[in-house]
Length: 175
Image 1 (cartoon, rainbow, N blue to C red):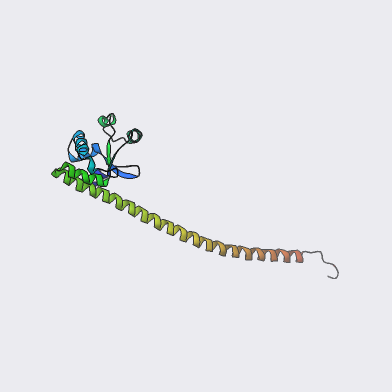
Image 2: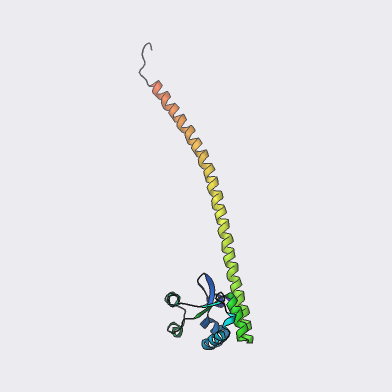
């Protein structure tokens, strides 16, 4: 499967990149109900940093902002489980099927690609800041040099103006 399929199913809630139970059920080719049952039977394997249930406000926000959710999911009375990267890894051990393992490997690769992209963006941002600082420093040096040039030009013009005043003055005495 294409990594972009997995990446498009990764959301961010509570500052954590997660996948939702109905998307995982679809990828693992199981019913959402059976996936949730397996998780509830093995809830000791899913601490809060591995899995949490979305609250009503988070769920409503997702429904409002995400057009790609299936209609049947939008009107579900229960809010979905959200699995972190570690929770997804644990989920494949709970489901214990070959498809679950294969899908889990692909999902882990998608999470890795997202981390690489974030890391690359961070590095690019750092380089841009360094270039900006360097440019500001150089512009500062140029500003000083330009101010010196303007000062000399003003002095030259002032001298010229004074000379013209001197030459155009009303002369007294002999001509």
